[in-house]
Amino acid sequence: MAVDIVVPTLGESVTEATVAKWYKAAGDRVEIDEPLVELETDKVAVEVNAQAAGVIDEILVPTGGEVAVGAVLGRIVEGGAGKAAPKPAAAPAPAVAAPAAAAPAPVAAAPAPAAAPAPMSSGDAPLAPAVRKLVEENNLDPAKIKASGKDGRLTKEDVLTHLEKAAAAPEKSIAPKAAPAPVSMLAPAVPGVREERVKMTRLRRRIAERLKEAQNTAAMLTTFNEVDMTNVMALRNSYKDQFEKRHGIKLGFMSFFVKAAIAALKEIPEVNAEIQGDELVYKNYYDVGVAVGTENGLVVPVLRNADQMGLADVEKNIAAFGRKARDGKLTIDDMTGGTFTISNGGIYGSLLSTPILNTPQSGILGMHKIQERPIVVAGKIEIRPMMYLALSYDHRIVDGREAVTFLVRLKDCIEDPSRLLLEV
Image (cartoon, rainbow, N blue to C red; front, side):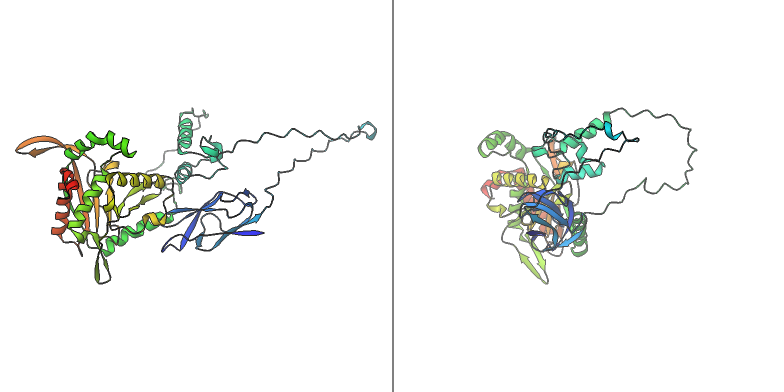
């Protein structure tokens, strides 16, 4: 019986996808729930698993093909046999035939002992998105890289080790050739050597569309402030060991900024609102998006009802999103919605930036690198760990007064963390 491999429901408002990679080929044996193909949507990557055990009879949509929800990607024949082993080539006939009388009677050859099953090579196992990107960027053959992951899977470390060994290997000496004629500075470059054309992924196209949409539709403006991190760093250093022992998660700075942002949003509700048609919609809930950088681009998973979370819950959820993002396991639901977004460019060393709105939200907070700087405290110059903050906002909803007040309120909560506990 043939079973169709069908594009599943991809989430709200997602109707199309691109076939990113087939893990199997026609004729391959598959087991139930085994990953068959990876689809890339404009938000996440989705794996389609086998709904039955059998053999892939045919693949209808090749890698790179565009498909809609419900489309048939291929078919599985239940219980079929896998690819037949190739028959050994017949021995070549001798140049001169031997006399018939001298030919011995044919004797059946003893069966050769069965070869021990070879371990699964890296080319047989599906590649994680980060590994696949690294392999494709460096033009590597996964089958030639020694895999150390579970079930013979290739890991990112395996690829990096392979590249290091290749770089360290001495280059083969080549006989010197006649020196080429000098190239004129005006001579045209050889086509295909100085540049490379790569089709944008569906996710990258969607990111580009959303960023441009924000610039085209919102009256976007950015205001800045700086925050002294001395007290929050001291608080973190005093309790980080106890916090980790009790909650099983490290205490970071992001949880403080999430809670401080919520306190500021409650005071300035315009930053937590959006425009729908000719109406302003004020949100009385706080779903905070936290921007996460991945191999394929920036994604924004959402902390639902973050105002009801403690610091430990915020840190645990952010850590879980980070793991899912690295493994390409974020779902549409993880990134749908959100009333406000926080982006931390400081982890990459950014000192100052102007973040772009995550439409239709009206505000996004940009965190930056913590850097010691001389500042004046009570009439004296002191060295303090400082961070620049940036709030980009939609001026159609938020006025300058509200934007500045929002940042001042957030700054107060970070510089005096006891305010978060006392809600003052």
